[in-house]
Length: 187
Length: 176
Image (cartoon, rainbow over all chains, first blue to last red; front, side):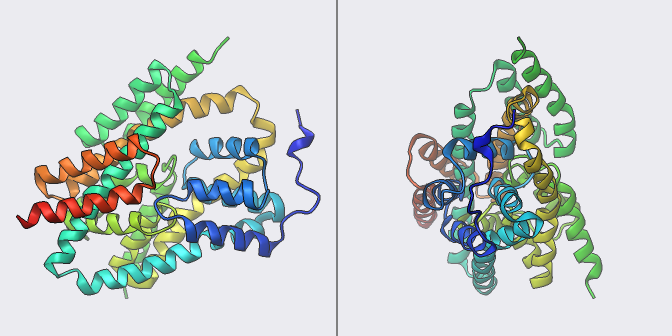
């Protein structure tokens, strides 16, 4: 069913629009780009409806790669083809990479200082907490089936507890989890 | 000069990018294994610090690869690591994006999401645990990870607020 609502708007964003839009998403995304990405794409630029964006993001969650980079690829390609995708990715990465180089340069200068080490170790354990909290939040929001919960727990225990390599863990659990999903979604 | 190192960096991040379902946050244990244990390019504490910088900086979480590339081989390392971790998933996204209008209503996509998302999130939980362990700061570190995790889980504030409080708590706890 090719819904007419999913056709691109009559005035597609230009290369410049795409670059600036994603530049802004990259620049503003302190502590995660997801919230600001939705704001720029849906509210500010009206490139997609809320529903279309949700659908796109849902697909990106099941694909490899950073979600917002995948969104940049898909929207860039939809409006301006492969070059548009490239421009959008360069846009979303430009400011973060510049900031990162600055931060890494500062780090290289202070890395030996005891206070800097202390602050960054504190930042590391806190950032680990950020990831745990975000993952737990997303997991609850995803409302997995009982089979999904089992697979999530197994993935966590295999990698964090038994230090299983990620490729093996995925090779064992992805088919199992897909099987559970197929079974619970039938009828 | 260090072409071999650049090739290794490109190979590691390029191949891991293919299994980074939901983003680089699921890759932290595997990157740690490769960079700290297999190749011994970094000690575990330095890995944890670079991870902290990459997460505190604005932008997508795949920048963990970028900053490790920078640390190992300067600007060329950063470029190689970033391009390597971005390119394979971007090509997949390109084709998936072109297919989405045909797939979005189908059961196949629902199954894919319902099947892969819980596993990806379980791996992300493991990433948080491994990252906390990598910092090597003992029980206090685990307590702060747990506290920040709980705060992020329960509140709607920007998580960086909790990260800032976590850093302050850690520095104070080590000063007395």
